Image (cartoon, rainbow, N blue to C red; front, side, top):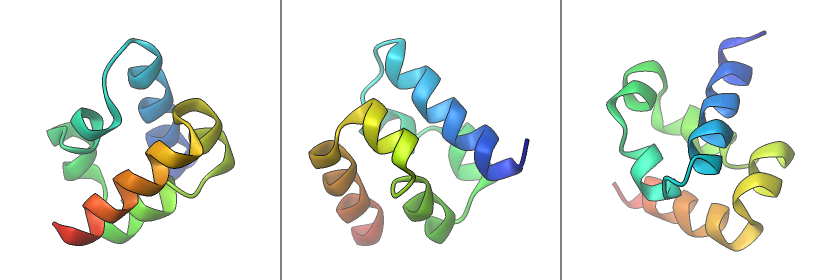
Amino acid sequence: MSKEDALAAYIIREHRSGRSLEDILDDAYLKNRSTEEQRLRLLERPEVIRAVGEDTAAMAAERVRAS
């Protein structure tokens, strides 16, 4: 499993446990292990989009770009 695969799995797992995508993206665990560019790529992965919803992923990507 690649680092990106592990981070995508983390996002999906945390979202399924009830955390908002915004909260997950602000998580130190994710920020310490990825760059802004990597987080944007994670939000484009089909399995992440399916798990969180297309609109939610698009809004989160805008938020990452703005930060």
